[in-house]
Length: 446
Ligand SMILES: Cc1cc2nc3c(=O)[nH]c(=O)nc-3n(C[C@H](O)[C@H](O)[C@H](O)COP(=O)(O)OP(=O)(O)OC[C@H]3O[C@@H](n4cnc5c(N)ncnc54)[C@H](O)[C@@H]3O)c2cc1C
Image 1 (tube, rainbow, N blue to C red):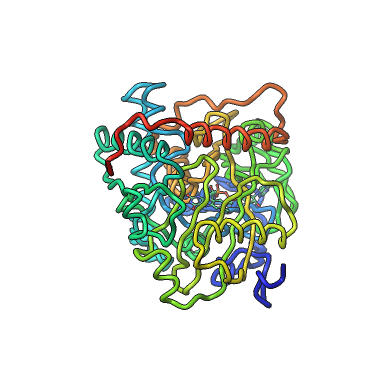
Image 2 (image 1 turned 90 degrees about the vertical axis):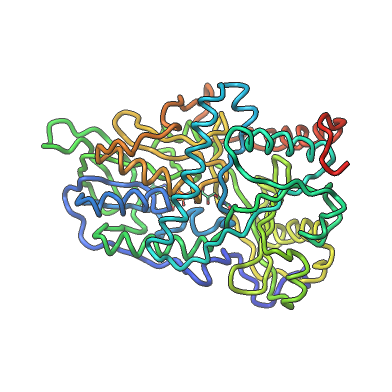
């Protein structure tokens, strides 16, 4: 096994090399804040920054060092789609609702890039384009149906790629072609988070790392403060509370924990590669996902000649070497030229699924929340953080199509997703079932 790992292999996020997690004590705890925020990822910090710049006093609490969650562990793909297909959403809820949801997704995507540019956050944000690689001919046809539906209703660009042209995009024969979405983006998630955190601190946000919130309770009759928050550093009061814990949502917030399904995502980085070898793998430096529900994904590192990739979500492995071995198998299968390269990093992070596969934003018992990003939390977490802040500030701009939906749970579910292996098997079955289907659309390459 060791011949697959570099001598300095680390079981740690590659992004922490450039944006290491740091201890952050946050100073003395004030007795009261306008807003207390649980969780220091994109959602919490974007809300905090917006509120502080509007003159509110804000405290952000994280159980771990700030940025410990998925925000400094993800793949850094910037998209504007959901796990839930646009065409299916439209069939289920009508064109008005589906297009309102997807317009918000587009706004989340565009506003995240605009924010990064305005704030001059140096995080390698680029519109590199994305290849969606079809795992079978019928997946290709389904992809075309979905993208054609989005283009017709929303004007979103795409180009179908026949199998014969796949190698223009990726050094593989594994896929039945795919589609290129030319304007989707990518960034360095660690540097983005670090830039956001620096700006929140500069705006006066108090960030308390290694400071778990253990309870949030109503505080009736205590001035304008509606909540009492128990933290590892003591008790504080706040007029508003935001829960921004996504895949790390604790059982001490039972209403939220009952509504998100935490699952583990897996990623790895290769050693530094000869630049021409990397350029051959992904000549246009696009991000790549495959068309399965349980995706494999690939991208070049932003500033070094390495490939970053992931997949095998929620497979249950914990041992770093076993994880690296599994991921290396995925790499060899998709990009055989890289069969002999070593891995320098492998890591995991927690995402949050939901029972309707939709992200959720809203207010329950007076507590604001944004979570359930289903793998789209880089733009959606940033967007929901902004929207929550605007709602707290009473701004009309805070309106959001996602806020209207009910947030479903399952009877007896308490936040322990014992059923995840079954869900992953169901996804694999659905992917295989679609793969066996004879394509119903005439694929564009014929
Ligand atoms: C491997 C992987 C790859 C991914 N790839 C992508 C991608 O390419 N594109 C994309 O858009 N999304 C991706 N995601 C998802 C995305 O990273 C997340 O949706 C997003 O970072 C969530 O941000 P957040 O701020 O809501 O939560 P997080 O960044 O997860 O932060 C939640 C924080 O809450 C804290 N917390 C929990 N309980 C408490 C408590 N009781 N008190 C105080 N603090 C607490 C945690 O310590 C944690 O730091 C990926 C996720 C993973 C794991």
